Image (tube, rainbow, N blue to C red; front, side, top):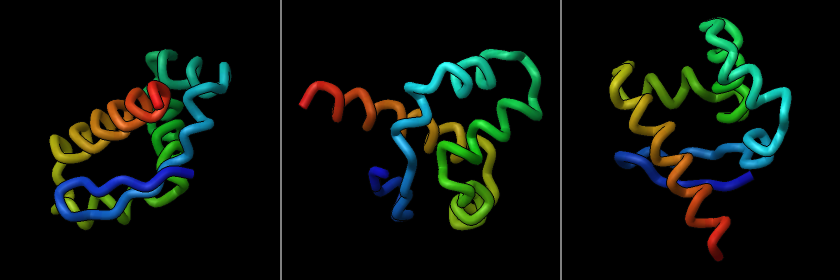
Length: 78
């Protein structure tokens, strides 16, 4: 598990998810329900908590996911 801060919210995520073929298939499936479950898994079941802390703003949540992916990319380089 890794932790980042995004817009003043401490966010913990499971970086191992993105290495899972099943997780990658769920995200790429085109099935919104599967994609949401994958996001829930990535954010350790705390996605709604984070969304609430970010004002229940969909754009902020997309930004959070982008920040998580950028953090993972930076972690991989280290």
